[in-house]
Image (cartoon, protein in one colour):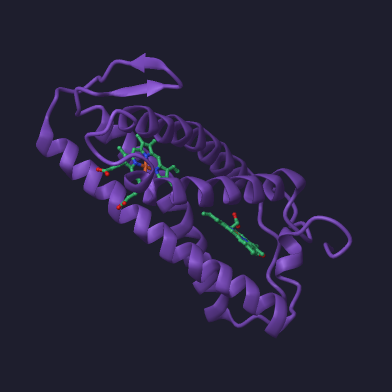
Length: 184
Ligand code: HEM
Ligand code: HEM
């Protein structure tokens, strides 16, 4: 169970936030650019898709670690002046970010197991545990697609809110997640 409330996020939470944040932005860009990098029905397609799948599975593991860490460590308390509705909105936004972060790669992983192509994890074949079932593949692939766009929208809102706290409210919220001298 979480213990006493700290003044800012601990070093592990901050490291995971920034490392995973950067990696997720890269992986999202990779996903949206797949068709430009390797158009469908070209020889390069399989290798590029499998690289995306492999990186996505590594990210899924890191996301699970991040969530497990977060569930065992309390977030710092909000500044006293922050209105209750803003605290609720921030909590909901963070919850939605975690849900999307987790479900997005999970949907991609499940989709790949309903396709005869399966996954080549950095060159090593992971045989699919499901049948080659186009309808199930299309369903989970569609989920992966919708969640990819949802995460992009949530991250845009999250970064905009962080900028507002840093430059308009100047209420110390961003310092809770910062490294170095600016951090509390
Ligand atoms: C956190 C990790 C991941 C992120 C952020 C991510 C993001 C994306 C995005 C943004 C797209 C483009 C969607 C679109 O154009 O509408 C995409 C496509 C795709 N992703 Fe992922 N992905 C992740 C993990 C995975 C995993 C683990 C797999 C499978 C094991 C996977 C398989 C695919 C495939 C096959 C496509 C192409 C779908 C198509 O064009 O039909 N992704 N991904
Ligand atoms: C430039 C990019 C980013 C900035 C400036 C930023 C900033 C912040 C800040 C300041 C907090 C702490 C808020 C608080 O005090 O409670 C935070 C928390 C959080 N951020 Fe980001 N972030 C960025 C990118 C991302 C990305 C890409 C993701 C995930 C896709 C993400 C997910 C989260 C989550 C889930 C939390 C809640 C932490 C928790 O309470 O467990 N962030 N972010």
